[in-house]
Length: 116
Image 1 (cartoon, rainbow, N blue to C red):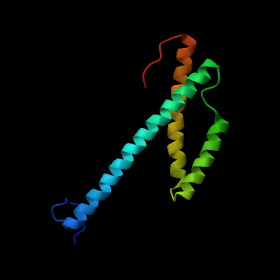
Image 2: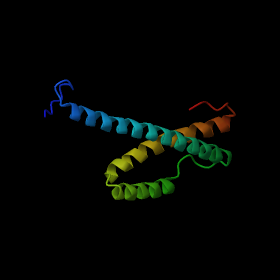
Image 3: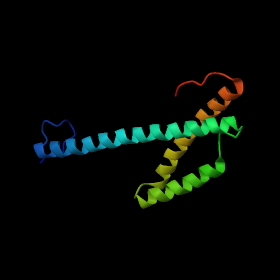
């Protein structure tokens, strides 16, 4: 059995099948992640509108710190690098804050909300 990465033509059929099976699983997981992120952003958009209506700040550092600690624990329990999980959450939170700032600005200036 060969382990060449130059293509699949010279690789054993069983290896190609296993690779295809694993890649199909990865594709399904990627799709689920995208859908979960879309749902998460729908919720955070609602939070942004609520914050804007009540003139609350777009960012909540105390909540973010609790979420980072929570996610790091979840990552450790799932055998995922907690530093990676924290970076991922920080990326998402940065995007959420950007959305909340935009929503607050639109609310304050009376402009029509844009699509995300």
